[in-house]
Length: 67
Image (cartoon, rainbow, N blue to C red; front, side):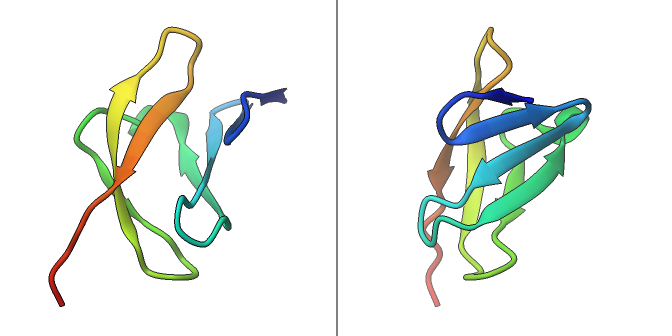
């Protein structure tokens, strides 16, 4: 396991920390691509992958959705 602050990498699995509620969201590393949306299982906030970094981590942003 490698800890990069808000992202932890396991073999083939990435754990993203929800920027809203701080709970974990596990995703397959192969699914981490720019433009991909994910939803937090706890608070329902959607976020998007905006950048893949050379060290294997990603940048995400909350997607503002009108309700």
